Length: 286
Ligand SMILES: C[C@@](CO)(OP(=O)(O)O)[C@H](O)COP(=O)(O)OP(=O)(O)OC[C@H]1O[C@@H](n2ccc(N)nc2=O)[C@H](O)[C@@H]1O
Ligand SMILES: Nc1ncnc2c1ncn2[C@@H]1O[C@H](COP(=O)(O)OP(=O)(O)O)[C@@H](O)[C@H]1O
Image 1 (cartoon, rainbow, N blue to C red):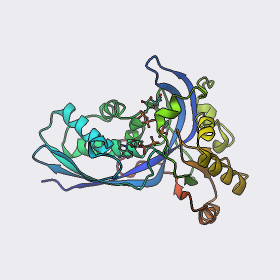
Image 2: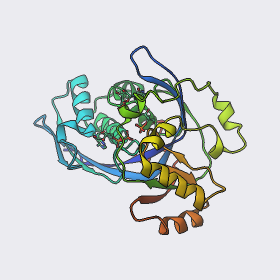
Image 3: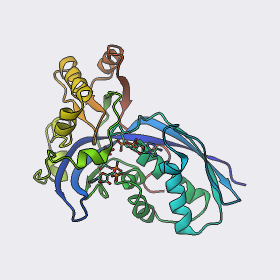
Image 4: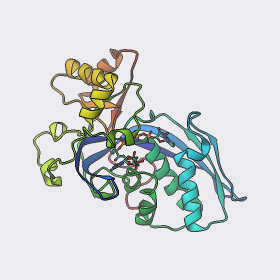
C-alpha cells in the first residue's frame, strides 16, 4: 500500500483583474495576473482499495459531497475508471469566499495528488481540462507557477514575479463569485492589455485595476472599510481587492506589513504572506 500524500494547497491573489467581455454562455472573459501566496490549506490523501471516496475532515459549513476536494476526486475516478478510492483529510486555513481561490486550489491539489496515487497517468494539460469543469481558477493552480491569464482564466502564460510581501485582509465577508459576475454594474469592456504591458510597467503594484472592486465596495461596507484602512495606513502603496472579493491586499516592506498586522481592527483577519514562485507541492515540469 502506498503512503498517504501530504500536500499543501496555496492561495492566490489577482494582482489586477480586467473583464474584457463575455462568452455566449455568459462566462466572463478576463485578463489577470495570478500570484501564488504562502497561505495554505493542508490536504492529506490516502488510497482506499474499496473504491469509496471519503472526506475525513473539512469545513463544517460545506457538505462533504459539495466539497471541491470530493468533487475533484469523483471527477478523476469517473474519467479514469479506476477501481480505487481515497480518504481525503482537508485542513482549511484559507478563508472561504474570500477571492483567494482556496476551493479551486484544494481541487487542483487533489487532482494532481490522485493522478499520482492512483497512477492514472493523465498529462498536466488533461488535468487542467478536467479542472476547469470544477472552477475557472483550477487550471492555474495545476500549472504550478504564477501566470498572466486570459479566457475565463484557463489560457495561461507563465510569468516570473519579483519577491513580494503582502498584507492580506479578510474582512470576514463571504462573497459568492456568481453574485458579482451577474451585477448589472460590472464593467465588462475593459480594453485588452498585453503581458508585455504588465511586465514593462514601471510598478507592477499600480498596474491596471480590479473591475469587480467597484461592485463589491458598493455592496459590502466592510470591504470598502478595509480598503480605506489600507489607503490610510500605507498611503504610498496600492491596495487592491483580490478576485471577486472579499479579501484586499497591498504589497509592503516586510517590517511595515508586520506592524500594520498588529494594528488591524479586530473585526478583520489579517495575514502577512510572501509571494511564491512555484506551487509548494509540485513543480511545473513534473
Ligand atoms: C473571479 C476569479 C478570478 O480569479 O476568482 P475568485 O474571486 O472567485 O477566487 C475567478 O475567475 C472565478 O473563478 P472560480 O471561483 O473558480 O469561479 P467558478 O466557480 O468557475 O464560477 C462561479 C460562477 O461565476 C461566474 N463566472 C465565473 C468565472 C468567469 N470567468 N465568469 C463568470 O461569469 C459564473 O456564473 C460561474 O457559474
Ligand atoms: N474545499 C473548499 N474550500 C473552499 N470552498 C469550497 C470548498 N469546497 C466547496 N467550496 C465552496 O466554494 C465556494 C467558494 O470557494 P473559495 O474558493 O473559498 O472562494 P473564492 O472563489 O472566493 O476564491 C465556497 O463558498 C464553498 O461554498
